[in-house]
Length: 341
Ligand SMILES: CSC[C@@H](O)[C@@H](O)C(=O)COP(=O)(O)O
Image 1: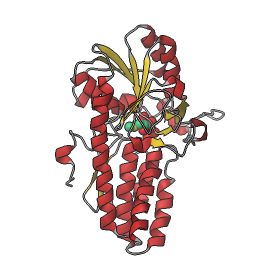
Image 2: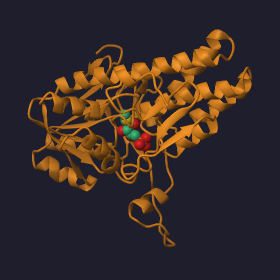
Image 3: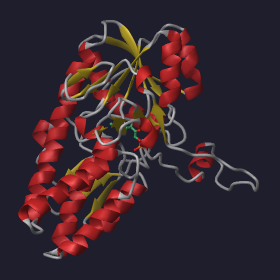
Image 4: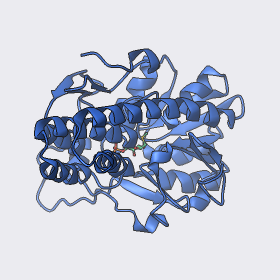
């Protein structure tokens, strides 16, 4: 499998497309196993997004764009069939707006041309992927420049190359911060129940040769009280027009703790994650996933009767708890107005 992004990608690429077929590293198996799935059908793309083979808002968006290309190749000139595929694709996960955004971009190409043209869709998908790589680089520089030298940072979930088209959002800032000497201590939240932190972020930091420590979410307050952390840095799955942030469950708790301890909170996301049509976080749909994920994280495979679990996988952090939001357009401060940095 070749990919046009090899030279410009700064390293690892979790989503690859050769014009016909998609290759995804199976994130459910990391870090124990690095297995690549080859996909050439839209149903398999939808399943891969829904089952978290590929996850992280920007990576989902890029994958969906390539999925739209594969669907168009399979449908020929059956525009109606392709539109049905797109409807199913955008419903694969509800909270990350990058998915709906990517599908809307692909629909716009078709509307502009007045027909289904898989080559034109492929051009658009590559453009979107390249733009994400570029946005990651810009955000890494802009976000790390805000951090004072010698700082400690705590990140949540996974926001690196597995979650994006390029080097990452929040993790891109962390890596650039380490590289430039501004970040001296890196802490990664385990991120229950799917363990994006202890499985995926740990894998990425180790690959990058960065020293770090993983902690359980319950240890975050004690870590902040110890004075070792200056910034909490996270990504986002959707940012409302007022700056409210939907991100991995537990982000809100970190923001509350950060404010209590005088720690700053930075959110890093490309402008494709900003949803100008969403006035506030209250309107954002929060994905609920199978409670089996919670039992599995506890090592319980066969669930005793009477056991029940609540498994919302995102939460909303109110804008007033966020000190700055970094996109490729610059660093935004409260009151948030994403039309001008
Ligand atoms: C660059 S990734 C930002 C977010 O997408 C990330 O923090 C996150 O919440 C991912 O959730 P996931 O459920 O793993 O897709």
